[in-house]
Length: 536
RNA sequence: GGGGGCGUAGCUCAGUCGGUAGAGCAUCGGCCUUUUAAGCCGCUAGUCGUAGGUUCGAGUCCUACCGCCCUCACCA
Image 1: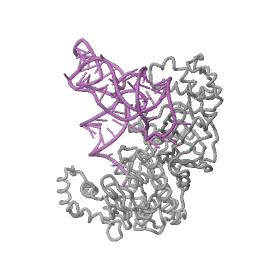
Image 2 (image 1 turned 45 degrees about the vertical axis):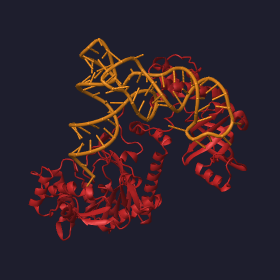
Image 3 (image 1 turned 30 degrees about the vertical axis):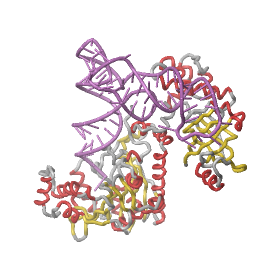
Image 4 (image 1 turned 180 degrees about the vertical axis):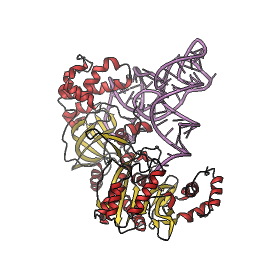
């Protein structure tokens, strides 16, 4: 679309002869004012008019109003409108005045800008509900008071963005109101907004036209404001813990750091196939080698896998590495960043999630993997026969699985759903995390934990492996085994370890999931502004 | 990929047994200077997701396809 518009700007003639319409538009006028959508659709209207009848009719009526505004000498797409007050600010000032119902201040003025979301026309007095980023406010525009602006006000539609200035007052019914005497139309909306009461509720349309979702459903906007606060708090917390924020490549010639299928892309000038990162891990560890002792990155990662309420192909993770620490320190980091996020929201550590309440009070529960397996599956982790019996009971086809894989299948089937309250599960079977440092006293155990909340994995951490020889061996073992992990040996990463990486704790926390939990959102798509949708 | 559900006016939704496509909001035309989803009167509004099929007749039944949601599988 954008491309078409740009082409049109250069060669308007290609869109055919000028067509005179009811509203008096032609491509020349459109060109002059730079309203290309208008020029194009007007051109097409002779063919497409019948196609989408109502929508076209509604738009044409609004376009006619645009033209009428121009005839009145009013710019329907006005520019700078400064020194405005937010609705919340005006409400605060209004409250401070302590006016009675029906009263109007003689001196206190307000100036707002926002979208018209409700309109109550009573002849020569119009009540509008204006929505800005902070809330809704009523403005009243009377013919007597606005004088010359009245003809413009008669052309207002739901969805228009306007600016209003006037005295503050309280109506008979007790509603704080700006009694406008100055008025500006800032953007004429030519597409009708959704129904005023229900808003936009079709899930597909909400995702595809998120801008409509945002302006018509204030709760949605609130979720994304909270998302911003969560991420800001995580960043502040880490800065406070003397971390440095870095940015590492999203385009990677060799991908790694997780077991996941990548997206592929291509650099034309270099004629080089590249991958979108599945994790920033191997780059962040290189920074530890370089002497950056505490680093983090809030990174967009891309995994070419299934989509679900908990998985979007691109998602945001905070990944961090801390020299001379271990996974126990990382548990404190998870708790610390979550607490910081909660403090930045509302300070409430007991939060609803669906039907349950989750208590984020520190410290979170810390449970050994093997203990949980015994508790919920009733089997000892090293009792292969018992584990396989249990697997059979659960309907898991385990004949060809390695012992540790069966253990993990049983664990996932029996334990994870019970991990509702925040829990660190630690000391995983080494066989299912091959690139991980082993427990010094038990080589079958990996120094790893996962943080679970509401049965969902929130984070994953390790006491990092810094032995280059073991790392190289593990890499090779991985390569020979699974097809999708470490498709290419990352020699440079091993080289970095050969120079010497300090012992460290490393952690990744899914920020989309953290936001889901803290905002009581049931789908990851409700905390991602533009979740992936197939083109229509 | 398997299973289930959904797709009707710009939006939110009805649509009976297969028999002339409906309502509310919005729009348009009236009345209206204290309304709160304002109200009242009148009007307009449709490729029933797409393409086939069955039938005298399909929004409705059948098939395929497209899109979305849920779920399982895959997957940290």
